[in-house]
Length: 201
Image (cartoon, rainbow, N blue to C red):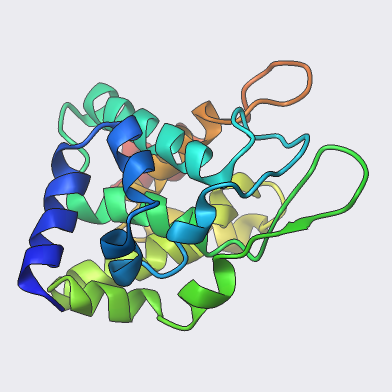
């Protein structure tokens, strides 16, 4: 990995706001690090549950909400792994759900990203083994937080017991704040269920 590109990417995730992140998705240098990102631009979804109609715009909105949620919940900035997980989570979706009619819409970045595993991207960026492990967990299990009632008690206990539960709860809430049901209500936010102090002790 080119050290200059790696440094540029790390600086972007740690210092950029949502518009800057969105603009970067269209840059070839960004796509070299995160395959499929460039293809996010112009991926129309029709009538989706996302507040924005484009995967890239939704990702940028989740990113923005993550920065706010981390400070509000924990009094700290979202770290690099949490910020990277936001980007990789949406890119790995094989399809995007729509509210009505037409079924799912295939996401063109999925195959490109699947060709490079999350762990490989982490290695490219020089992450430690423990950071890559946390990144892999956050990307792979993020959807389970949205399916809290469906994953069963065993699945819920596994998420609660994870050393990465706090980061997972941050991502889930940031994603929930970026989505709307047709009636305008926010998706459920399971911070207490995932990450309450009583469950973590």
